Every structure is written in C-alpha cells, then in structure tokens.
Length: 399
Image 1 (cartoon, rainbow, N blue to C red):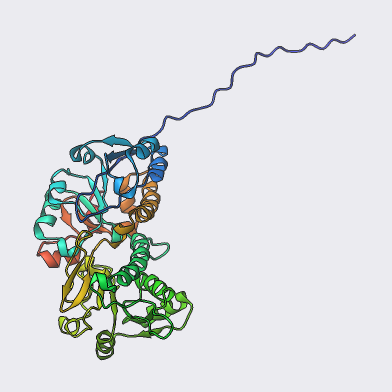
Image 2 (image 1 turned 60 degrees about the vertical axis):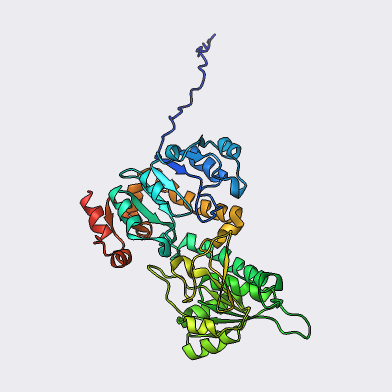
C-alpha cells in the first residue's frame, strides 16, 4: 500500500516592500502684500498632489484667505503653515502671483528659483540688479510656453478670465452711477446697443467678444494679423466685423465707440502702442477704456497702472480701467487655474529637480529672465542697459 506524505509548510506573513517617500525640493507660497493681489500660487488640492509625490510645501499663514482657502485647508492637504515672510522664503522654489517686492528679493538666497509674473511698467534697474546680486533664477510665468500645444498656458487661462471680466467691467462702468454715459451694453428693443471696439484678436479678444455678443453689444475687432482675425471668427462661430489695423478706420471707429478694450499681448517686451492720446481726447465723453494690456505697458497712450481699490481714473472725460491683475477680481477661479498649470509643471521636476527641468524644457527656459546672477532677457537688457547672456550658453557651462 502506497503512502503519500504531505510536506508541512509554515505560512509566513506577506511582507510588502515599502519604499521610503522621496523628498524633493521645497516650495514656498507667501502671502501677497501688493497690488491688492487676491490670488494664491497653489490651491489646497494641488498641495495635496505635490505632497503625495514627495514635495515639501510651506504656506504662509493667511496666504489663501483672499481666495477663500483657509490655513486649515492647506494643513489638511499636507502643507506646513509658517507664520512669517522670512520663514516661507527659505523654500527652494518660490511661487508668487504678484512680482516680488524689493524687500522680498532681499529675503532670497543664491540658487533659489522664483516663479512669478513680471509687470514691465513697474520694473526698474534696481529690481533687476537685486535679483542678479542674489543670484536668483527668475522665471516670468506669463512667458512659460507649452511646446507641445504651442501656447503660453498661464497667459491662456488668465486671458480667458480677463476677456470675460473686461466686458463685465465695461458694462458696469457705463452706468450713470459709475461716471459712464448711462448706456446699457446690450441695448433693448428700439434702443441700439453699445459699440465695443476690441484691439487685438488673441485669447482675451476671443472671450471678450463671446461675452459682449452674449450681452447683445455691437462688436468690432482690430488686429494686424489677418490669420488671428480668421481664427477668432472661426472660434466664435459667426460672422464678425473684423479689420486689420488701418489707422484711419480705427480712429473713426474709436471716436464713436462706447467701450474700447486693449487686448494685445506681446510675446516678449512691451505691448505696442496702438491709440494715441489725441484719439482718446476725441472719444465720446463718458466712454470707457479697459486696457488689459497695461501689465505690458498698455496699448493706449493715456493708460497708467491702477489697483483694485482705485481701479479707474478719468482722462479727457474718458473713464480708464487699467488694473494689471484683472483675474484677481475672481481670485478663487484664477487661483485654481494657475494652480493646475503649475502643479503639472512641477510634477515634471519630480525626478531631476527644477534646474534639470529648465535644462530639458525649452518652453520653461523661455520664461527665464535671470539665471544664477546673469540677465538672460534681451528686451530687459536693452531697456535697462544691463548686459545679458544667452541662457543656453549659461546652461551648457554648468555641465
């Protein structure tokens, strides 16, 4: 009789290999203190994503309050709440939605990375010089390019918000109580609508056009690029009154306009000056100018930067709105939009670090204007008389 022996095996508990979480560079989110800036660089949901991937996030107490994000929201997402500007500026990468002040630049250190907007009308030689002395690598977020899509993603989303907001602002400023002509933007039966002139045919213009048409206004768009005019018309999906910038025709239209929107974005340097003071002087009393391009100098000669607490001024009986950070009016929406873009960008630096990311992505390099003590932007070099060096040469010398 054959016997079968059963081999005894001892059941061992299963052990899962748990890899220690890799920590990457730290990111600082300070409270914004200038220009009535209400936005914040990262929303709590983005903080949670980055912390889960090993990033260390420092958030200054109160940084998200104006966007309706509390310290508790950030703490629950894994951020470390700090209680001073000095402490948050110890991070490796600083994310700001307003340009740093001179005092904030003084808090920075060599090889620190700054990602923030630049506002050309507010920049001066001292600002650039201090960044260079601190050997800070500074990126202008509005010049960061997505090479796959061929767009400037932060400009794109902020432009969508600014275009929609510009028409809402203009409609409000036309009211009698606000110093306007007392004209309803869309008109009513028997009363013609307001006439809106939009200079530029980019993303701001597209969304301003959609909004103005939706409210019933008469819209006319001017741009020197006929292909952009064609694209805008296709995007809106209807026949529009469009024209290349013929100075005589543009002047005629502006003299009878109720609203003029400046919506020209320069890929580098100052926005072109499209409307002289003489033309503004001859516009209808009580008409409204909203210069969305003012953060790059403005495309109306009479434009000057204003702020959210005093957003308008009157020049030649024309009401001007020249706030450079229009999306800050809807801070939560704008913060979410910025946060989504910056998070996807920062996650690409997970393995090699931020400087390796700058090296590998030409679209990111496009935003760099100072690199480890050297000015790399040709326009700023010409404007401030400071020597600049080609960024690619600097990066090559690092290796």
